[in-house]
Image 1 (spheres, helix red, strand yellow):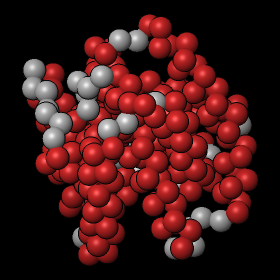
Image 2: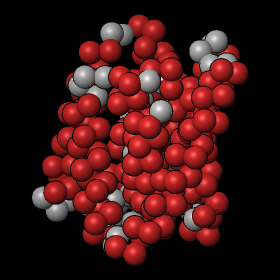
Image 3: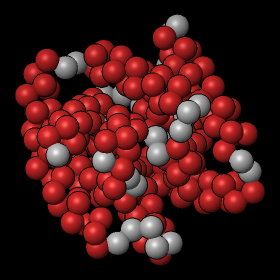
Image 4: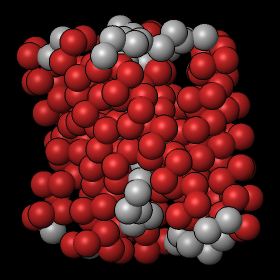
Length: 230
């Protein structure tokens, strides 16, 4: 469990700093070294961490924008469920990955998306879709909020992913893909999540909005590339 704890600590620290990244970083690695943790225990880990982040940044939550993103996320998960029934993954994962990579490139050359109802709805729908189909849905919302104030990024993304994780967990439970054994594994992971979260408190002293933006773009780029192979 030492390697599992190390991976979870780094992933929890990353998400606590930029607002997403736990699933993106941890899920592929843990699937190789401890596959029992994917997907249900990892969703519980993400649920626990996003709850901590939502409470810590509650004053920065934009209720209007978060409400829109919840609607978009629900649409994305629903669309993903239908698509996965009728279309082979390789038909859409290349398109999704390419879209994320193009978004990162555009951001690197100076384009910064404006956060409004339309862009929020589109990004959250895409995040919900990607989260369901590739287990790495943070990139679209991360790209949208890349230039927002640091605490606003973490607050709004955390509430969005809190809802998405609860929704996903309910779906897994009713589908028979999650059970009490997953809860036991999650409980064993809690110390690592807490340590990663506490580590991020120390890193806040060395992190500014520009560094957060660069980390967001890097994590999004990795997400786009990973979607080709997930």
